[in-house]
Amino acid sequence: MKQTYLKKSATLAGLMGLLLMVAGCTSPEGLFGAIDETASPEKATLEKKITVSELTSTVIVEFESGRAALADIEKGKLLGFIDAQRLNFGEAVEVELPTFSGSNGLNEQRFAQVADFLTDRGFNVAPRVTRENAPDSLRVYFVQYVATVDPNCQKGWYKPEGISYENLPLPFMGCANADALAGMVANPRDLVAPANSDPMIGERAARPVEVYRKGAGSGAAPVAAGGE
Image 1: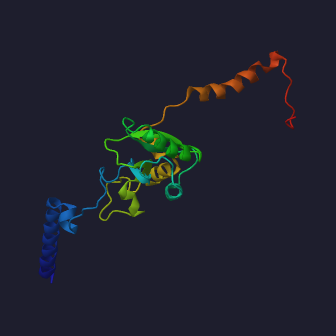
Image 2: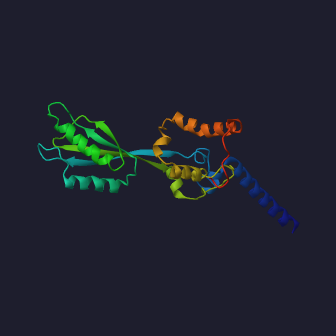
Image 3: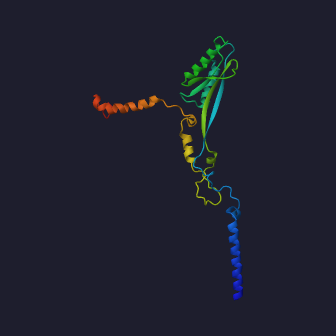
């Protein structure tokens, strides 16, 4: 009986030693299968990219041969273009600048017709020089910028498969900040080409502060709480 017990103990010890030797020479991937989605510094960065795409929409305004007047049907086409693109008051719209030479002033009048129509509706019109001009027509351009977040963020909340012993951030970390920034920016173009700040804005903001500081010695009457 004692001999049998010793044989079983030796067999069990041999199996345990074999398992320890295999575990020491084999990676976790070898034991549990290939793990492709384990968290890594490359897959778990906190900085998510925001891609800004430039989209240009165009409408062609046509004129009768030899005439500069803007027909009613073309006015309706422009109004439909404005509604389709959801243009807001004060946005920039570009009008194709035709060749003025040899047109006896006809192209100038056509350009003015389209520009005045858009300006009267509150848009900022700018000329756009093109290489080729089609006869009896002008193109109107509206350039808009669209911000999209890193495609990995579109997956939503998820956890990589496999062993997470690295203690790294999960892949979706940073998506909320990127999505919030892309959604709240007024003009996505500012993310790639910020507009120059107007120095007058700072001067106007500082002027009330200067008046307030000098108010005690200027003899100015204090403003009542009710604003009168």
